[in-house]
Image (cartoon, rainbow, N blue to C red; front, side, top):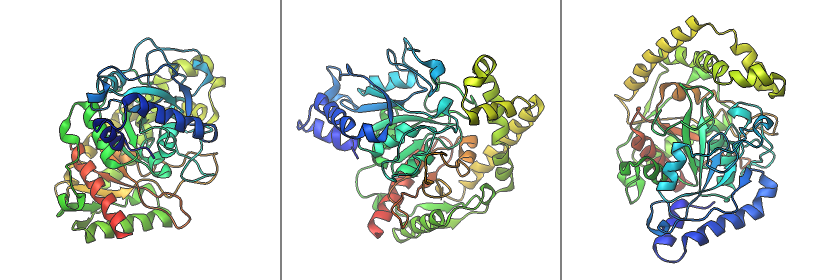
Length: 422
């Protein structure tokens, strides 16, 4: 994989120009894209600005999920309904990337309208298995070493799950930390823009640059030293179903490694209110999706893919009163989630039910991601754990809303602890 921080170090040292860094990505894309199919458009004219060498993301090529507007590049939403649609303006998150010196080089595949109907994208880390969704192309492009940074979105589990399946780092930040204007809406309550990169420090550095929050950068040095004494809660979310043996083993491995590295492991019970909120994710998502995709459903229903079509058929019967009740429960549940962090600094949990499912007919389940999208708490996918057959198995760290730096530090600590224990 291409490390964003490694590229920046080489540029700062004068060993690589920003233009040459982009050329590395173009060469990797030429070599891998025919097999991986992670991109829907490559900007042949993209180039770094004159001040790129000194900018925090100067020379860094970015893949942008194809529901996010980039001026002059097509936004197809993963659907032929939007063939030929070319926005004139960048989404604000893309503007922030450009201001930090990054270059939007490619649009990455998305499942149609960011729901569950799969794409043709392949998983570089687990051949023959799904790369996950809906941010399929963003995760796969980073995993294949074609791009050092990519944008995705999460409404259920569409950032953390594909990161886990493809073995890369990712963050779903606190809700509203990154703007969702200029992003095709599925659920205005839940939609969250996230980032993919090779390592947790890469993700932290990129988020700090885009959000203008330098405190999100990870401190230098061994994270096992800077994170010593971390109180790490383990939450298994039994209400979300039973994880597969590989995921259970991965969570146990991560917890043991973290404890050996100096963390205090705190088993956490599932608060009943969080279980109730988890069950109401679909009520909120579906009620809002029926409105957000109202034009597509009313005028082009038969052109929608089958899983999305069925979802919108079902969503039409969600009553406003049920939606209002669900929002009240979720509001209370956010308080219950916050209470968990009174006894721990961060939570360690499953990132997915197991390794990437075999075949391309499904993008996998978001069952272990939905709660944190509902609560708006920041989540970080921790790479580095493999199932016995070599498929990546993800765990994630979660921190209190607005404490993204704590989720990142915990993830960096766990990743380093796991690597040292192997």
